[in-house]
Amino acid sequence: MTLLFLLAALLFILLAALLFTEALEAMIALYGLHHGFAASVLAAVATALPETLVPVVALLGGGHVAVATGAILGAPWMLSTLSLGLLGVVAASQRGWWAAIDADPWQCRRDMGVFLLGFGYALICSVLPLPGPRAAYALPLLLLYGAHVRALWKLSASSAAPADSPLPPLSLMRLHLPVQWAAPLQVLIALVLLIGASHLLVEALETLALRWSISPLLLSLLLVPVATELPEKLNSIIWLSKGQDSLALGNITGALAFQGCLLPALGILASPWRADSSSLLPALLTWGAGLWLWICGGQLRPLLLLPPGLLYLGYLLAAWLNA
Image (cartoon, rainbow, N blue to C red; front, side):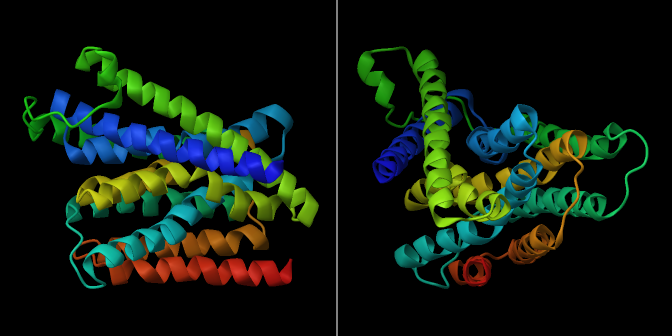
């Protein structure tokens, strides 16, 4: 029965990802949104909701600090390693290992710069004592991400695409709804499906983890992000297959900027925010993978996305053998 729930959740996540990418493309054409803002903010924040809910529920619902800390650190760990490696493999299968990924290098480096600053600051806070009010330590992360969103919004306003661009096919248009209603409504339906299916998938993984006697930290660091990060992975693969490289990469780098700032801010505010040896190593590797993407962001190739993915697989194998 657990495996059936797992399969059903995966199918619903795939359906939701298809609906979401389709609807966001329609909104870009309908409202003349800049691809950078649409991918790095709208798509990234929306599809990051499932993994954002995990630490929120863990902290506010039951005080499960280990699960929350693992989820906060595990979400960017998964995106910066396995998701990038998977994106590289898909791109290579379609174009070759050294073909160009036609994404905006400025956008990639800006997203990753915000991630490196925010996540690096959060790591420093996790190993140092934090005297005084916690809000003072979380505030820089909130301001950093707010400034990032503001800059992208200004870019979107100054260099948006023409609002009369041809609209891509939209599933809800079959119900003869006006496109101005159909596109936002389809985004909302896709998000409800994403959140519900991700929750179902996490529950199925937790059940399997109990049977396999996996620790809560290892579960939240390695297994839960596989489920909650599926929306970003699937959205990016779909956009990459359509040749929309800026949306594909921006969806991942924008989610990293979001997760590197707002999730650690939540951890600082609502938990002891102390990284131990089992969580600090993958967190440092996450920062290193982000630095690698920032360095390679000016001239991305599928082959250059492979090392972060191999890094994740190597760590997963070592963790499994030592569990």
